[in-house]
Image (cartoon, rainbow, N blue to C red; front, side, top):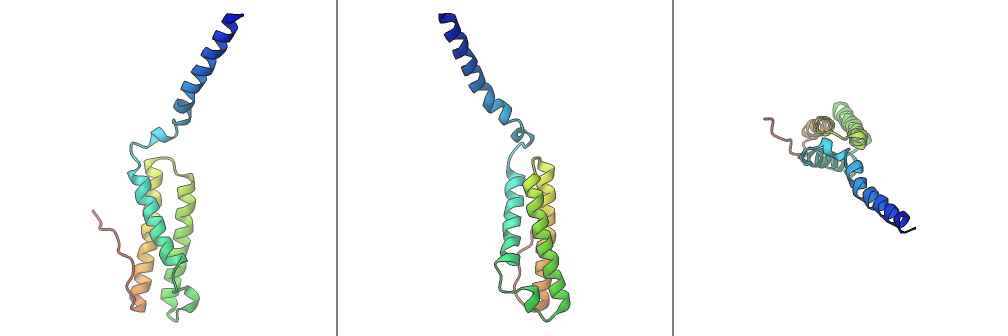
Length: 124
């Protein structure tokens, strides 16, 4: 009867040891989280301009600036969807590129309106 308890204990210890290994497999696709941090940072920066701003497309007289702000909002929503599914460095890099496109649209719209806009990342 003792051997049953020993076998059960061994199984529990093995299951406990394998759980982090098996659940961490998805995260091993990333060598570091630099891409994820950069993508989420650009996403939140873009969100500041399209969600938390007093300048909305409805309040702008310049139709081109309004169109640019609508494009920026669409890029923000797209980036959010990409980040929700991202799991590899390439996914996070793609999400960051879409967010930068939105920030470029915001910067162009703000320039047309004579307002200071977001700082855009330097191109390598």
